[in-house]
Length: 247
Image 1 (cartoon, rainbow, N blue to C red):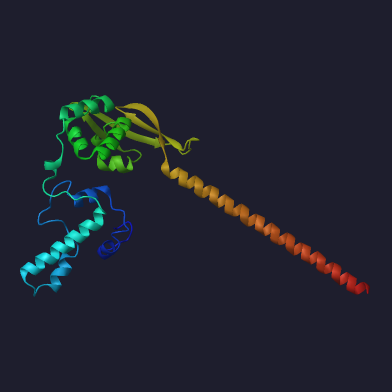
Image 2: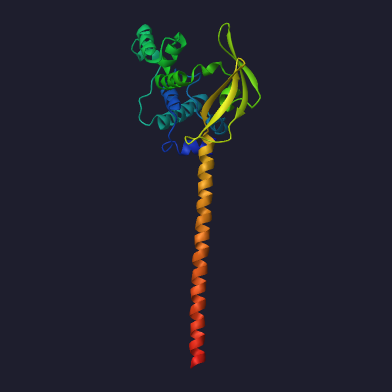
């Protein structure tokens, strides 16, 4: 809602046109159970202002109708799950699932990973792929993971019990590689290391630079054409004046 600048009323009015996240659809479908007092209805507070004088039974019918309408708009034809979702699910072999995950992602698959995969297979698979490529990033502090360390900053990472790595960021290369990467120099337990990291902002900078050069080139070309046209008209005017004087 914040990203698309939508109000609660906008969501209700445009529910049939909006593409709701899969997590919202599954929640409204009942895949993770039934919320206390039923599914949320954004109009509840507004409805209460108009039905204070109504009987309780009329209020309940109205609220139930609104909930069902909102739910149907989100599900868009999907069959809602009533009651506990586990009652209609086929039994899951956790041991077999863990063996499959170990075969696909390695021996470090935990029981928590199996549970995550059982509930959210697509999200869990994306996380396992990310972890296989970048390692146990969950050991990093949130700020370090999201924004990276500052130059000169020292931080420790405990990757397992009794094993802590100490990092210190030393410098970041000013020049980009042809692949848009920068070399980052750091110390790992006192030893100098370096790694090439993709600079996602560099692509935007290069694009902006090329776009600026293109604009300058177009401006220069336009100015030259304007000057040529002016010069041609000037010469043509001089010729006409000479002809008139000759007569």
